[in-house]
Image (cartoon, rainbow, N blue to C red):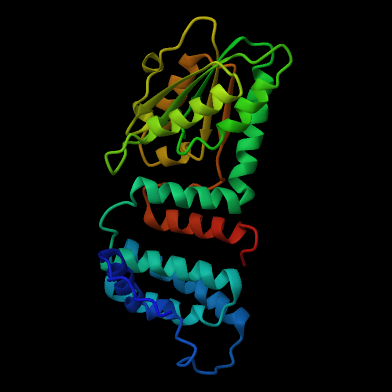
Length: 303
């Protein structure tokens, strides 16, 4: 049965515009691709140098040169295989969007973003391992405590917490009362996302017989937080959890210092921090680009 294509959206139009700008990401269709023998290693080196030259041209606002270079990047990427080709393609797309100022009209709506996050969580062990490691440390810090409070700087879909709640439920002597404060940014589509996450966790808590209290806390930036906002209580053991959040404060002068000061005022039993070793939020575009390219090259399976 034949299927009709859906009408082109503005986001698709934007993507097509960027694709055209760099020659369809420099990847011709199979029927149009010429047969050319090249030295892949030499071309790979040229590709890296061209990426850096294009980023430098963007920083210097020499858009005419940057435009010429980004098109060259697309064609150089054709000779590469696997991860190197993919990485170069994504970098070329990012540079082209910056050159032609083709930015997405609006962020993804919350429901679609949630679906993408869940697919990523299921297919990539990276985040699961981070959650497992942090949860184990929190569980050990809460040993023997009757009232525990986790302050999560990166609530998102709350996927980290069912495993911890189940571990607490199996604790010898019974589970403690568990309070969770989930911090997140304002929703882009007027939905109460944090409330929905808390409701699902509350259902789980009821099923496994864990006394549970939840509060969703909306904050534009972690740097705006103060310990007094979080309703800390006497006799509670506090854990502060931050997964891939602190790096977003690097471009805000004093941001990390303010957050760490607030954390100190919370007097936690433990602070769990998960971050990739990448300083890509600096003020200088070329520095950010260079650091991000380095990190991309170090990921498993990358060239």
